[in-house]
Structures are given as structure tokens and as C-alpha cells.
Length: 600
Image (tube, rainbow, N blue to C red; front, side, top):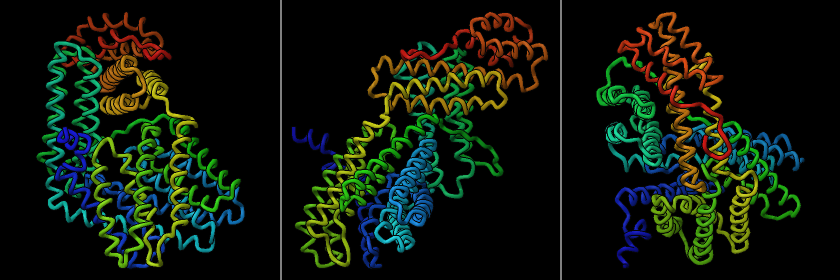
């Protein structure tokens, strides 16, 4: 029984993998190194340097590169805005906090529209401005120097993490291409195996959504693999995304009822792109771009929720005159910046709060018992190594990611190491109280102000696809079929991932409805591309245009035109097979408005 407990619930601590242990030791050493350098430089708040290390540290070097550069960009912008707020409202507390709330809300709202660590750059700009501006309230004349110090801590933390990571990751460029190829080939083989079975029997929504999740997970890793490859990457990212888009096209063709030969062509096209990565050719100019979709309403809700939270926190300080209120506001903005763009912020905030409690307990032990015995920075570094390594191991356990996030980031902040002295008990308790109050306050605001509702998110996602269909049929700017598939697949996977509170039957009904809309969109785009290609007879092109116009108004009536189109002699040629498949699929799939019962 003990073996099962150690290997299961506590396996992350007592039986970590070599990769997990390497990540924990590497990042803990980088955090401690940044702290020691900051103390050697006699910076005023050296604890912010290790916080940056834990913020940018990830298991993948490509992720760390991406996160570090966007954090640096966000820091520069945030420092500038923080100084501007102090300069604009030096004596007007009300206007100052309104301006701060609007800035933070704007950043969090804009972050919703971007993928990966681009969104993180906006979040960093929000909480960096808040930290600089709130620190400058006490001494507004020093706002510029506070901003420069904040930038120094962050640059130091990024540098230390990068140096340690490079020492622990020799031969990174060579391994990155091999890892990307292995991932793409694995997903491609899995997709082919699944679809061979689907051609004989229709897949269930659970299996279909799992395959789409694997494809989109591989897509999400492309940016980081390319960063690890460096300048030698060439057009790797374009070929990799195109290969995955071809897999999605194969899935959609199965859904459209296409013969296996048509599905196999899409799979083989993806294989050619994988071969282009394995054996790059000189002068390759292939391009493929895509983006994921965020509804404007989602960004507006996110920004409004965060702005309301910052204003409420400011009101608490303004009314109560709490001596630690400025720190409370800064922590609130920091927590919002870290959690606002999570797919389900309420769930993330629960784990984050538990990690914050453990962080406060461990920090109390250090501040009250251990730090008073420390006589040199090296001794402090040795004492901090144990909790930081444990926190690094927890960060690699999926169920403890949010716990470790808050624990690792804020442990050095709560301990507050400094050359000039140490926290006394009252300063520690006041600072910790402000931190914990901010964590629980932000969690409550996530639950009370415009809370995330999975069923509403599912309806909005399907409604977006439904609104796009008429534009695909008759509009001027039409995306390629592969871009349309990648965009919708990303939305479907995210909707399934965030729909934990929705009954499984209803969730898969939404998925099936969105998948049907995706297939219809692909078929419409293929018809439009055939019409624009110039290879069709003029009469056929006119009939297809009439069909699409009728389809946008009345799909059932338009379906009656399909048999006549298919009986034409010039539609019987093998070159028209994909066009015929698209027409038959649109005839079978009725386009109907999305209802509120989840049926699509």
C-alpha cells in the first residue's frame, strides 16, 4: 500500500523522473543565483529577480525563449505606463486608480485575442505598470528609478534562467528538429489508423475530439520547437502547420462522406510537408499562416471583470486606509495578470489559492525561525534550495501546476531577503496578509463578476461558426480550407476542454454540431476555390454561384439543385471528384440556426 501511495499521489516528490528532477534543480539554482546577484548588486528588492526566474521557466527551452522575450517586451511597456500614471495623477488618487483599472482591463482584454505567450506580454504590461505605479505612490519623484529597478530585476531573472538552461541543454538545435518530426509522424500515424477504422464505422464524438486535441496540441508546440532550432529552422513552422491542417482536412473529408482515396490524398499531402521538414530544400518559399479565434465578447467580459476587480480593490484601500492596502492592490493586479486569460479562471484560482497558503506557511517558518540564524547570503541560498526544488517538482505534476505556480513565484517575495536586514514579524504578517487577501479577493471576483459559464461559451463558439458560413458562400475575402479547419479545430478543442461543468451528452452534442458546421464551411470553400480556379465551364460556374446564393437563404431548397449539377457531363470527370463530394455533403448536412438547447 505504501508503494502505491509513493508511486501515485506522492510519486512527483519521492519518485520523480530525471527530466522533472533536472527541471526542478536547474530552475531552483537559477532562482537562487539571480537572488545572490541581486543582493551582490545591492538592489533594493532582490526578491523580484527569482520571481522572474520561476515565471519564465518552463520544461521546454523554446517555451522559455518565447515567454522571456514577451515578458521583456511587456515589462518595457508596463514600466513606461506606470511612470506615466504617476506623472499624470500625482495628487489625484481617484483618477489614478481609474486610469490603472482601465489600463489593466485593456491589457487583459487584448490578451484574450492572442495565442501563446503573446497574450502573456499584455498581462506583464498590466501588472508591471501596477507594481511600478503603486510603488511610486509613496515617492512619486522616484517613479523613474523604480521602473528602472523593476526592469533590472526582470532582465536579471531572465538572464540567469537562460544561462542555466543552456548549460543543462547541450545540442538543443539538433534535438528540436528530431522531436518535432517524431511528434508530427506520431500524430499522422495515429490519425491514419483512426480514419481507416472510421471509414468502416462512424467515430464517436469522444474519439473524434481526442484526435483533434492531439493534432492541436502538436500545433501548439510548433512555435517553441522552431525557436529551439534557431536560424536554421527556415520554413519548418509553415510546413508543420500545413501538415496538421492536411490531417484536419482528412478528418473533415471522412465526415463529408468522401471515398477513402480522397481521404488518403489529404493524408499523403500532410506526409509531403513532414518530408520537407526532414529534408529541407534550398530556396523554400512555402508559406502557411493561421490564427485561433476569440470572440470579442469574451475579451470585453475579461477586461471588464479585471477592471471592476481593480477598482473594488482600490476602493477597499481608499475607504479603510489600510497601511498595507497599496501592496494589496499590487498583488490583486498581479494575480489577475497571472490568471485572467486561463481557460477557466475559477478552477485555476482555487489551486493558486492553495499554493499561496502553503507559500505563506513555509515563508513563516523561514522568516520566524531560519532567517534570523543566517549570517551570509550563501547560507540563505542553501536553505532556500530545498523548498524551491520541491516547488519545481510540484510544477511538473499536472494536478499541482497551479499550486506550484503561486508557491514558487511568491516564496522569495514573502521571505523578503535583503542586504539591509530582514523582515520583522509585524512586517511579514502585514505583507503576507495583503498577499493572501489579494489571492482570495481575486478568486471571489472571478466567481462573482461576469463568471465563466461553459455552456454559454459553447453556444457562442458555435454561433460564431454559424455566422461565418454565409460569408464563406458569398463574401469576397474567403480563407483557405486549411485555415478554416485549423481555426475551427482550435475552437472545438478549447470548448471541449473548458466544458467540464457541462453534461457529457450535451457537450458532445455541441461538438458534433460544430464539427458539422466546420465540414460545411470546408465544402463551401472548396466550391468557391473551384469556381475561382478558371477550370470550370462558364455555365457550371454560374450554376454553382446560384446554388451558393440559394444555400445561404434556404439550404433545403438549394439541395434540390445538387442532383442536376451532378448529372452534368462536365461534372463526371475525375478532376471534379472533390467538387462533387462537397456538393453531396452540403446536400446532406442541413444548415440550421443554433438553439439554446445545445443541439446546434
